Image (cartoon, rainbow, N blue to C red; front, top):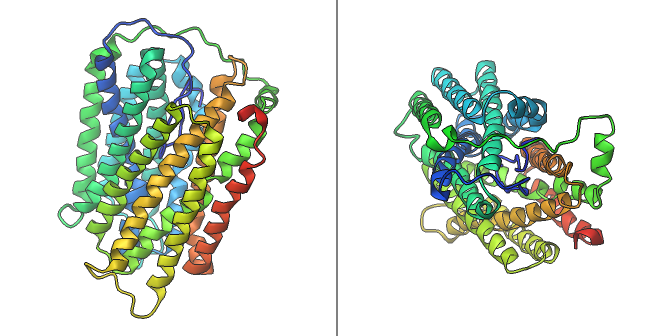
Length: 440
């Protein structure tokens, strides 16, 4: 999927760092998890909208792969959460920030309802639509900081396990609803109706946020452990054992996977798979498999599996899955290949989508566990900031390839482009052999 004291900022895959101290027990665990589940669900909507719904709609309207990929640059506000996170942390309450940011998301969706994304043959997104999508990401990033700060203050250490499960599942369900569910409704609902539906959902969530008992009874903020921001803060963060290696890994471990996940669905669309069917498989099916992969990773780690050996095995399986997907791509390009219903090639292509998301979920969960382990080596006053740094760089690596994948395919061609993705997916396996002993 910032100085949000203990949580990960990524919009696609999310995990929590250790909370600073237990909060007073003011509510039952269910009373805390239900509002958190609802808020994380609506927080996943913008990610699903821009990762699942928007690329397919833009490609169906004739935009090039380069233009479709460049639309991911609108995720940029998520990379600058450290800029406004101190403001959210020190001014006002999480309840007020959540209500305002959620209502702002509804307002932006209402404005988007009156602006179609593109017309056939248009060179790219209209400037107004691009600006509104940028504002959508800005409001979602502010909401993310406030929501994670709320969870840190609200949940006790014993509740972090159930809370983390609720966070991941609810967030990805929101992404499914916006990316796959709405895409399946495209033949029935127009662009304006889709965004009016999203706007109504956000405004309802904002109203419920304001009256939720869990937020009205929020315990007072804990004294800050964060160090003052100085010119030496960056040096202190990088001096933590294992940090430089972990920075290199999180920047590169998703490059190949992100490129294939951005391009392969669009290539299937070009080969004749319908938009609703693609939305079902690449939205609902793929995210369900991603949740299953993340759950498997969590279960294996809970059985005291060490992150590094598990990560090595997961990366090997992922490389094998990508090799199979590349072979399928060659078959799709061959004369006489058909993706007609009930053909083996069609089934294999759609199943490969789900397999890659399953393996991606497994790899991501294990990687975030490794990031937590690295952050726990930092002094207590630096742990939250250290984890936020790693999570932001992890997001940067994914956005970089997601943005450039279309341009690579247009310039190199799909076949050569997928060979590049294979090489990028093999690199983290080699880099894993350089892991410092402090992370073992």
